[in-house]
Amino acid sequence: MSSTMRAARPIKDLVIKPGELVMCGGRLSRVLNCVSSEKIHIQIEGTCDFQWVGVGDLSSYSPQVSPGRVRHIANIDPDQEAAAHRWTRTLAIAIRKHGSRLSKQTCDQLADQLGVCSKTVRRRWRLYCDNPLPSAQLPTLPGPPPRARLLPPLVESLIASAIDEIYMVREASTVAAVVRRCAQLAHQANVPAPSYAAVKVRIKARDPMHVATKRHGSHEALAKQAPSIRGLEATYPLEIIQIDHAIIDLMVVSPLTRQVIGRPWITLAIDVFTRCVVGYYMSFDPPDQTSVALTLEHSCLPKDKWLRSLGLEEKIKYPIFGKMSRIAWDNAKTFKTKSLLAQCERYGIEVRPRPVRKPHYGAYIERYIGTMMGAIHLLPGTTFSNSKQRGDYPSEKKAILSISELEQWLALEVAGVYHNSPHRGLGGITPLQMWEQSWTDKEGVTRFPPLIGDQREFTIGFLPAVERRIGRGGIQLNSLNYWDPALTPFINDGINHRVHFSQRDLSKVFLYTAGDYIDVPLLDRSRGAFSFWELRDIRSHLREQGKKAASESELLDAIEHQREVLFQAANRSKKARRKIARLPEVKPIKPSGEVDYSAPVFPLPPIEGVIE
Image (cartoon, rainbow, N blue to C red; front, side, top):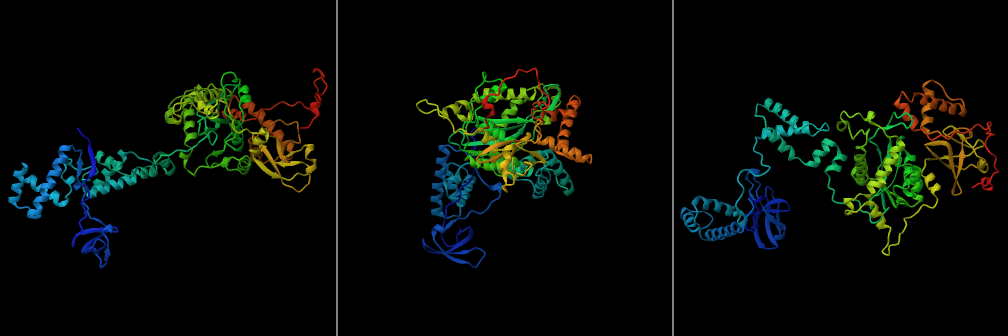
């Protein structure tokens, strides 16, 4: 059976003669007189406005009909089309001879001539008088047309009211809830309640974009319902890098006690042109500026040393590195700090944040995060995407991977599996093949992407920065004192110097001067590494107890005592284990008074005395 062609009957031809109704500028008008094709006198219906217009200003008028009277033409074959043309010619000749009024004698003659009954002739005659085009004589579909509304107007209004009240809200109720509300309103109005199918059809008839906006919010509606006919266009590798944060759907255990710590965070960067993951950074710290700095460091620098630290240099290759041209990320606070944007500008990296509340503008990184989480959902201890998917799966009991083991698995997943898997968006080749092809010329010679000249300066420049004047006590930051003899020339110079620091390790800061950075350690060099979060937590703890550290040494002693408490509580508290996992790696420092006399004595190499 042939399918239907959902098209209403065509608009009839434009007839210009005195007394005819026409449209002029969207207003219904009546033709009064015709002098020439450029001088037609019309009157706007219902007004005293008279105008002289041309033929090009007029269009035909089709009176509005109810949806039930709109004719929907079925698919036609050549025989039906020929019959429609035959009816049109025959009726046109009959009307010219006998006029527009159909007499019984003319009707009988046409019925005998065409071999049909008189009822068919009268029906065809009415169709021709209404529209003299051959398409008006084509067969139509039986029954009411699509979107026809046959319920009483009162019932229609009850359904519309119930849909607005129950369905078009952020609580996103079901169709069944709307049907129940319709039944309540119909009972109050003493009319028959509409059926489930009738309510569902009217919900389907609503504008999908408007429905999605009302039920899910504007940003979700744009992400799921707005047109997506054109993606982000990149013409070469490292032209556009998208970066975003995500919390990993996996419970991680302590490497010592094998007890659950929690879920780590990851910051990912993907190249739009090759779809390669250019870099990432994972830790238990919430995303901050240091996370972004370390992600950019991992993305732009070669990864040989990093693979050796994981013990994977012989198992996978990760030849993705180089300075990007543009970064695209969202409007989170971690991406809007001044020092981060200033360092991007110094290195010629364009920053283009996506529009506010428009997650679909980060489609490539969002899609890869979904792909990565899909692989993580196959690991023991996964939390899945939500509680509904997780069900009664015991994530904490099944967890077996530590953070270092997860980092190894993730490197194998990214560089070993994803980079070597065919990608539909790349025409079936793998991201690694796309990367290698992009950096190989026609002669087969390998080219290199733009490289970072000073890796240390590049990374430090992305870290958080503050302006400080240097006094006789050195640099004061976070109520801590930092000193190095190299600061002597800057004492009381009256200049605000830029000082960078890592939120992961506050045991030293970096003073920018003369195009380079000076490492300035704490005044008390016996202290190991500690993080900004530890410093903040111990100060909050002291305030709760109504205390205040009298000196820097008391504050740092409190941090060490707090660590001892954490290690003792690690077997009992997951919160304590999570805090331990966030601690920086501490290298034990022997007090200056203790000397290991059992170690052999060697002369100091000359290079050790040179200050770089």
